[in-house]
Length: 334
Image 1: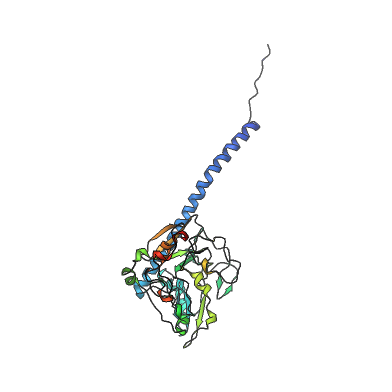
Image 2: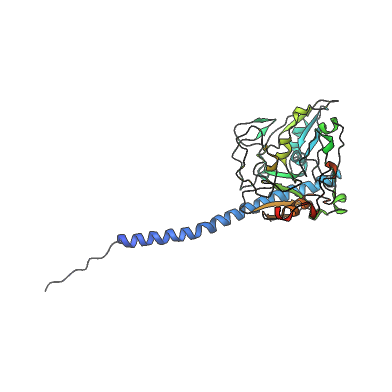
């Protein structure tokens, strides 16, 4: 009697293998968006923590000085000379960077990478600008967070000098004094008696900022820097502005492809001095009372401009601009 031996199957058939691969591919395709969303949520949360740290330092600065810093401030160095620096440098003593601040006071201008100055969703692929020149190598001066600098004024033209109704971070450089301007100030008392600290924006982020917190303009004792030491692009790179009317790039996250990373000077177009991020559909913002929120980029332009002005019904008066009243804007353009 013949016995038929059954041969044990080993492994998968080609069809079965293809089916398994297809199923795995489908599962990966379904899971990847969720994984990417979770990663972005983590990066966005870290960005909010960075802004929270800066907002807390800003409040500590205000408590100690009884005023907010300007987007440009003058440091008096140990040798008696003066140096105009961006707002970020003035916060060093309040963000556990006292030794770095003292190095600046000593005139060494040490540039150190500060992780909390960069949003993890916007790692800054281009080199920073230091003293007007592109530097090669590591991004020591990387900085993506920007200060509420009001409307884009000019320290070289006192006729358009902004006031506390227009911005939280005012123009406070030596060139302003040289051109007959006054170093105006704003503090929490002013905000409390007007629109309120919890209703006024202090900080945000900008993908075009390109990290130039280390830019500085030296001022010799008893003299002022030449006007050539300043460039409006400095304000556009360290601050974000509101305008007298809506424009192509003036809204949150507008013109995201308008990066100026290939230019010697950052943000030649003032309209790029706006809040923007790599967070899809949103941007993180910090208010003057220290709280940080995620703001959707479809916010009405007039509402955004009003959030930027400490006293929106008087904003623009220094430059004889239309005041920020609802009737100024055509609703179809908002």
